[in-house]
Image (tube, rainbow, N blue to C red; front, side, top):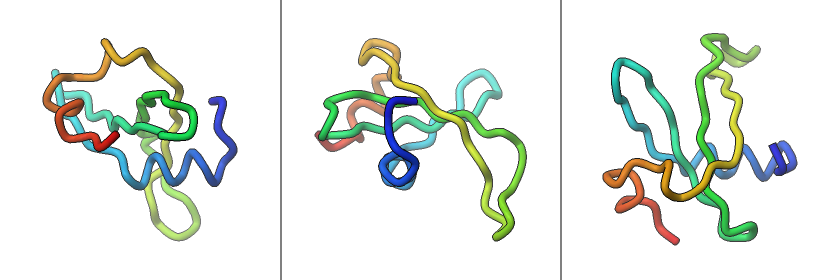
Length: 73
């Protein structure tokens, strides 16, 4: 992940869920870096009960079209 924790959390908070092939992923876009990110659930929860994720940058062509249409650039 090339974003600081707070920046990554902002992208995750505004991300869009996509469920394909029984695999739930969240996709986000960061205007500052002009990059797309995918977030996978760790199947764990933090101390406040929120799910935890790990994410990384991906090329635009790996973002599903239905998600890409919803992401505001």
